[in-house]
Length: 83
Image 1: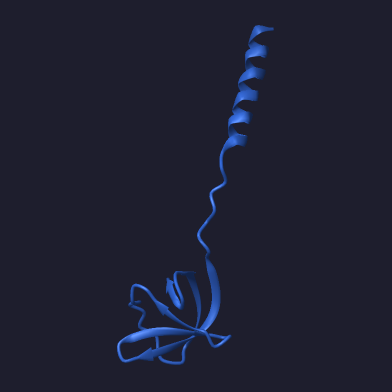
Image 2 (image 1 turned 135 degrees about the vertical axis):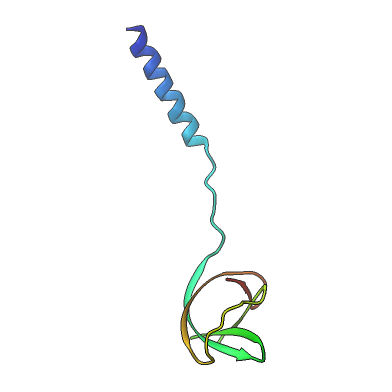
């Protein structure tokens, strides 16, 4: 009887502790279709809504100008994004 009581109390405590954990929010993460825009050595991505995204830090992507891509990014500030 005592083991069953301790088991129930332990289970209750573990459940209570698990409920108090704060949920962690993942950074804003977006995936979208874009067209590669090469300007000199810089690579930018033009979304289908005509928004031009600039990777920060600069991307080492070597795609061709006009190539269609699926880009996964986190918005930073303005049109700067982290890829």
